[in-house]
Length: 311
Image 1 (cartoon, rainbow, N blue to C red):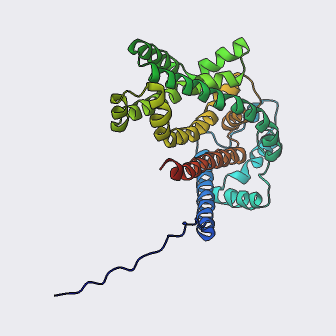
Image 2 (cartoon, helix red, strand yellow):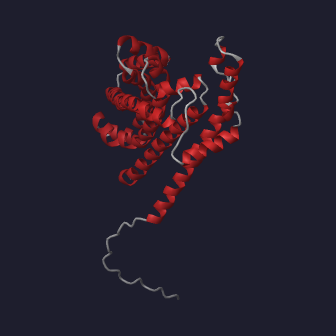
């Protein structure tokens, strides 16, 4: 016969204390910074390669001027000779960037840092209006359609959103320019259809989950279901969609600002592409890469903070 030891009586447990592992946080931050540096460098190299080997690189429209002699044309071509060697250009560009300099634009003959400083204010003003405004319309419409549960209203909203999605961004920008609505309104109309479609699908998918259907069977009202069961589970996906919407807004800036004649980053990017301005295009590519990475990182951080709360 085996004797079993009786467990000792345990006293009252002490309340658990939450300890912050600062070393883990520092390692995570360093990994993020290293990933950002690698992504930015890779994006710059890919952009420089595409521009360097694109058709017509190194050809200046000033060479078509019949009033210029051969010496003037040779001088114009020599001004682009520094960018013909891709490795030499990128090594020099990285060296200048580490010193806080981005070089001089070939198209505007001005320091790139000055161009970004002047143009970024206009673009940030448009984005500050467009992104929150689009999300207010999207969340209001998606929550209303999900709560009403009216098939006719759902079909009408789908047709309207489909018509807006089929409208080219250039046509929306042309309408905004002709009516004086501004770039912010044009960006809102471009962002709303895509964001609404994904937001509506996310809410509908969460509304059909088993625990929500069980709550509906117990007689809980639709507004309560949305507030306490649907929106909390859909929040991480919506936060990730917010980060994507920032990248979408940056992409829509190019046709909107160019057609609306708004002196922002989008217009600057298109003018640099038309002029095959290698230093300016590489800088703008790195800028968009940094903004996209930071938006995704912020979305991940918010989801990590909200995970223990929603659990």
